[in-house]
Length: 396
Image 1 (cartoon, helix red, strand yellow):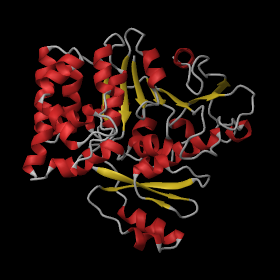
Image 2: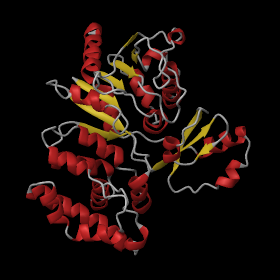
Image 3: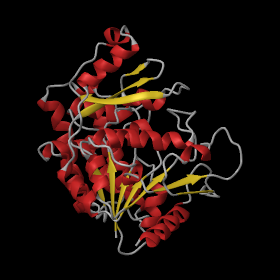
Image 4: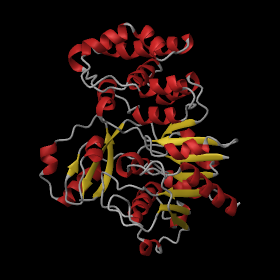
């Protein structure tokens, strides 16, 4: 059984963990790599590449839970007061540091050392003073190693991902929606421009995001000039510079062969909706008429849009899938089953199920309590998986 999951960094973790238990399941997790916050932003700036952060997070979710040392390696970050000199001292003693700290075997240590060298050589090539320029505060070590691998693999992100998959014996696939080096911009309904992905994620507001756009990473925007425009001209300007990301061939195949397609919960405008803008992705999903296509709404209020109700998640997904498809398809060509968390309790911190608004979609749904009893705000992965497989059995 082939399962394709549209995912953010950790949005589908509980679902992935449950599906991993089932024999004969092949999971492919699709992420976009437009993240530009913290260490990922530093990596993107210095290496002129897409952000490795969400790729790293999802690959770590596919690791064997027993490999606690490897999981610790994937999660390891320098402290928030890491000076450049301390970071360089760490890299000077890299082999001993990672070998002893994470109990790695020699083969993994040797390969990671190559990636470390690739990371450091980039600064030498560009004649950049590492001690003054690169911010290692709260920096993910593995992000640095992904960047180093990217450099020594001829700046090929797909090969880089495959290298880490083989090195850590990861059984399932992580795919970027595209390898085009783009960055995100958004506009709120009040006309406020959000110039980076990190602004979209971190600036909480009750003004909804009107639209998101993807632009070439090398474009430098004149904030004052753009902010001086009225709302309509801001939209026109952003549409004119928007670039539709090209889909990679491997993802095309995965969509065509998928038995189940899952739109996972997560931060919408930063982690998920940009993926749905990928060229022809909506059309490819619609053409796979045999797949169960499941949309899972969030449990907790989305930080970037705290006033969202359940139907808003569907409306926005359909908006961007339709935009990418270039054709008008009926709603259930993209989504034919919806899972909604609902327990009849009013909670301002939870997404409200507006049942009356779902009639217009004409899509089968199940609404009940899917929240993990032991982890508030998280889905019960086993219950979600059981519900999806039951529906898959009903249509086959």
